[in-house]
Length: 123
Image 1 (cartoon, rainbow, N blue to C red):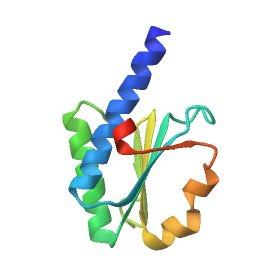
Image 2 (cartoon, rainbow, N blue to C red):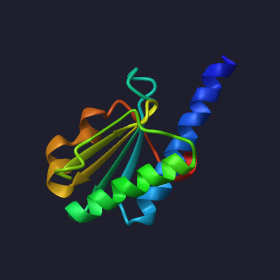
Image 3 (cartoon, one colour):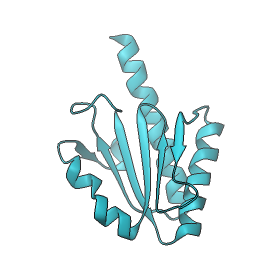
C-alpha cells in the first residue's frame, strides 16, 4: 500500500508541475479530472486550451520543459505538428491541450464525467 501512495503522490506532483507550466503560458480553462477510480489509463487528466497554434505549441513546450526539470519525462507526445490537440502521456498523468474548436468537439469533460473534477489547489 505504501508504494501505491507513493505513486499517487508522484502523480499529484506531476499534475502540480504541469498546471503551473500551463498557467505560466496563459493556458485557458484548465481542468483537472481524477480518473483513478474509473480507469486504469491514468490517475489524472489535465485539459487546457490555447487561443491559436503558436500558443498551443508554447504551452506544450513549457509543460515538457518544466516536467523534465522536475524529473518527469513523457512516455509519448502526439499532435505537436498540427497543434489542434496535443496529447502528452506521462503515465499516471495525461495532459490534453486543445484549440477551442477541438476541445468543444471532443468534449473530454463530458466523456470522462465519471471522473472527479478537482481544482488545482486540491491536488
